[in-house]
Amino acid sequence: MGEEVTANTCFGTADTVRAHVDPFFAGLATRTQEVKRRCRTVLQTKADALEAVGTATAQLHHVPPAA
Image (cartoon, rainbow, N blue to C red; front, side):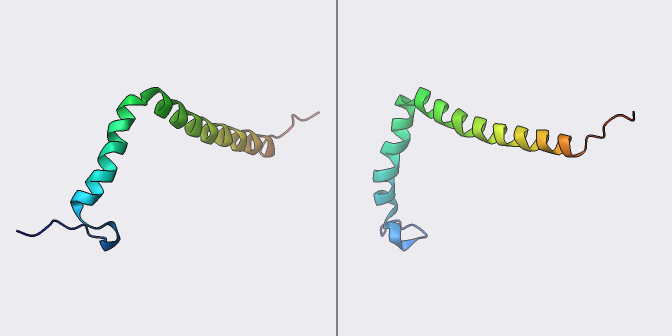
């Protein structure tokens, strides 16, 4: 049986891909706190942007009380 190849020939064989990808995923296990912190930072930035849009939208739709 021949070598297993990937769908994208740029990556070469499946063994070559595994040789590079497996250490990356194994490394995630030793960096859980860093990964969580980075993910939370990205998510918090997006949440802050959504909150700013919500605040601006609410201000645009605010009707002042009649005097």
